[in-house]
Amino acid sequence: MIDYIMAFLVGGLICAVGQILMDFTPLSPAHILVVFVTLGAILSGLGLYQPLIDLAGAGASVPLPGFGHTLVKGVMEEVNKSGALGILTGGLKATAAGITAAIVFGYIMALIFNPKPK
Amino acid sequence: MAVKKLGAQTVKFQNPPSIIATATVVGPVEGKGPLRNYFDLILGDFKFQEKSWEKAEKKMLKEAVEMAVKKSGVPSDKIEYFIAGDLLNQIISASFAARELGYPFLGIYGACSTVAEGLGIGAMLVDGGYADNIVVGTSSHFCSAERQYRFPLELGNQRPPTAQRTVTGAGAAVISTKNQNPRITYVTTGKVIDMGAVDPNDMGSAMAPAAVDTIVMHLEDSKRTPEDYDLIVTGDLASVGKDIAQKLMLQKGIDVSNKYTDCGLLIYSPEQDVHAGGSGCACAAVVTFGYIFNEMQKGRYNKILIVATGALMNSTIVQQGETIPCIAHAVALENL
Amino acid sequence: MAKITQDQKDYQELVKNSKPKPPYLKNLVMAFLVGGLICVIGQLILNFYISLGLESTKEAPSATSATLVFLGAFLTGLGVYDKIGKRAGAGSIVPITGFANSIVAPAMEFKSEGYVFGVAAKMFVVAGPVLVYGIASSALIGLIYYVVKF
Image 1 (tube, rainbow over the protein chains, first blue to last red):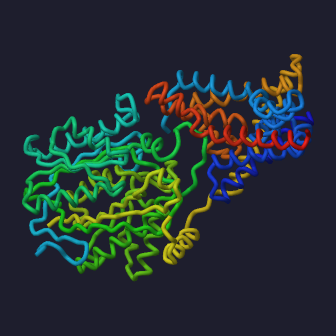
Image 2 (image 1 turned 90 degrees about the horizontal axis):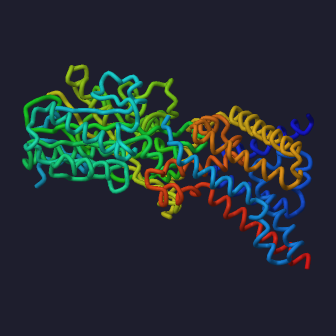
Image 3 (image 1 turned 120 degrees about the vertical axis):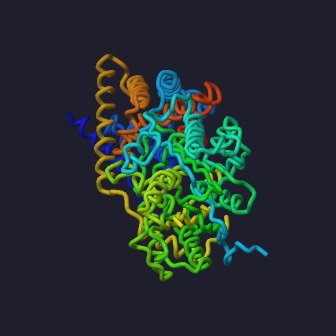
């Protein structure tokens, strides 16, 4: 049960920070997503994001900074395993499932559905 | 000597051209709004039996023009000019409607001020003796405007309270030398005014200074006061821009509070989820050609100043960090 | 860019003061609740995959991401996700389901321009920058890591 509560709190907080950036700065949602993914990558590089994942599980991995973290974690592991080439291969290797799913499901949904005006 | 010119920016017509017929087509959301009984055709869906939003917009414009011409009783081959514009790149709604209508075509671009620009040019051609019958039209479509200026429809983003909804619709009017009310008596052509707005989600406050500048110039040139009008109607400033425009006019000592309204506020009811109100070329067009034209024919209003406003930008130039230039044109409609 | 004049500055000040403000508190609460809820759903899916025997640090999170992407894409197709987004704001933009939404929405929208220049080319208009900055910064950090380590 505690893992759900932590996921809710941490995930909610990360999104709330995003909302504050949206409402109080001139940044567009696209800018905020870019900031978040980069920030996740940097925190991960500094070794600060893994503890958050350990604490909150999906609460830290589902929001976009988690994507930056997965990329960096993948790069670092791959560098450990295969040296410099890992810089180029590790990130996409670790995130392949999410990215491929996005492209495949994205394409299928676009085939099936049409946008609905409100 | 330009005998019909008054002051810096205004013309006064010698034989004020008549608007002999109008027609309006609107989308489903506008069709649920408070002006629904004034429109000629309310669409049940956004596609109008077409395959894309752009094609639906073109069809609305064509339909509105055909209806207006039919109502006017002017034979199709006696229409000497078709003056039209819209928001889509290279004004394709207007030119593609013109392709099917077959009238001599003048394409114009004034963003959401297009309806006033068209009426102005049309009236000048008629009073200048260059034509007896002209049809003027414009259109906009919520979906085609969204995808061109903003985001895909299904993107889950939040709109700020200053955002406006592009009116889905088209309006057309036949201007003629016929002796009939209402008439176009004055036209004041606006200057491009840029007060440094950068927020594409807040067009009302970007355009308000242009509207005020044109109203001030119109009153100055024509030596009229707001008391000369039953109603002063801006195009699509909506709630945010209208309040600011009113403030700016008061600063200049012009009090219009009891006779000032805005098409962007008239077209939707407050219960409709449209944020600040309506916008788009069709906003001023369907309100003017639907509501105002009808109420003038009935004699409820006899002197109205239409001040259609437009933001002259596209997303490329805004991304390059430019501020948003705006324009407003004023057209005085009167029962003589 | 044209130089900003004093008049423009004064006017923008007036606009700032007369603009209606977004409902800050409501937006914040909704973003927190919906964002938190999406993460709880993520945790449910994660625990489910772990209970199926998937390895808990790599396989299960990958499968969770793919599942959430599917859900985000499907809800976008149904026309539901933008309704959630209208209320939740960042709460449904920041989670990975929002990433899926930002891919499906333009892909659907530009279908009218064909399957190559429409669907495929426009798919990443919103999500592309996230990939570019995410992947580029991870490579840069990897380079620094490599230099420091070896």
